[in-house]
Image (cartoon, rainbow, N blue to C red):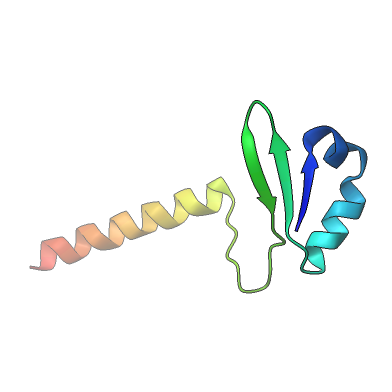
Length: 71
């Protein structure tokens, strides 16, 4: 596990992102905002934009309304 300050992370982002991508736990410590773990997004993760998420929610709401009316 590597623990770095926000200042060090900003100065060496490429190095720390490379290490996280290769499986190393990288923790960023901020005096004002707490600690954060850098984790790469993998093919098993699902990432949606706000627009995609809103569209899916609207579709689910429409689908749920139709199902409710059938009962």
